[in-house]
Length: 416
Image (cartoon, rainbow, N blue to C red; front, top):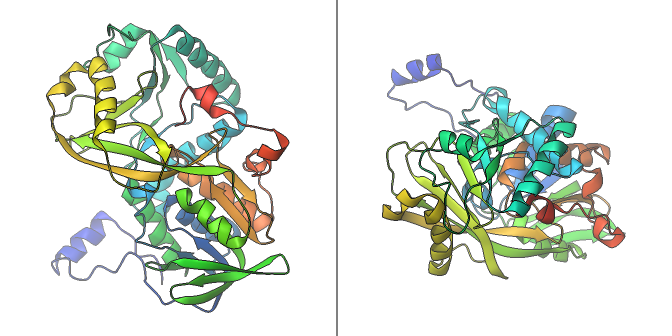
């Protein structure tokens, strides 16, 4: 199936038939008995992995298997923040690769992912945080990541609705990444799915993996609710369910699963055109194209697999943000939800070979996986195709055994 190009001309042409003749964006085929590569998880990371396997390495005999619906997990549940201002070199490398791929993604996929490099601020609200963020600016400059430290006055200029003289935590400045921003989360998944399908890959939804067949230490394929599907290589890209899938394959992963909640307000007129993260009080906010204030905070304090919201979380997060943005106290909440995130001990991801020959795992993105989607897919595809990638070298699952942590929880002051 060739990729039908979307364009202003195509819209005008389809309007003649009242838009009745648009092709489906991706096929929904029955699974074949065997593929070269099976990716479990049709979220952003899984679809990006499949896309770059095809685009960069010509590997197109690929199936992407999804238990639910495409992009229905964390990809459709996050607050869409994109940034690469990380302290540690391996983190900055993979997140900056992702950020740069986001810049041209709409053109590359011929699908508008609404990438908006509107700028991102991480507020310094304690002297300790100021020192940490200034250190990150120096590290970013060495890494080739463009960030700067800005004054409270400049913060107020960029975000007029902010209160920089908060009674508990005044704004002392901010780490500013001008090319950070947001994108439309669903569109990222849809754009990748459409491109994968056009390459001849099979996106298979509503299909649960119930077992992993391993013989002689090598993967043979997966048992699913639609029967056995054979493969030479298997990519596990299922976020908070990674430990469940690894258990089926006979090994353990050093991750735990927690719910991360978010909420949006009723829509209001445009009042904030940057993304603001306030990590000391632990709340972050941006404004969507529809006018909703998109709000998130920290993870639940206990392990769970729920995708619901809870009142205590709203209270905690909104209380933190009202001090910094007094005007939002008058807003009503429109909706609230949760996603299941996969946390490692050092709050950095795992992109790794595993104890089973032919099985590769991509997980541990914690609370900030959306921003990494294209970089993660690019790196994971290279790892699966070549057996190694410079972007994944430091992110092996064995680093925990060896004590080679990439500690972003301490470095960033927050796990995002």
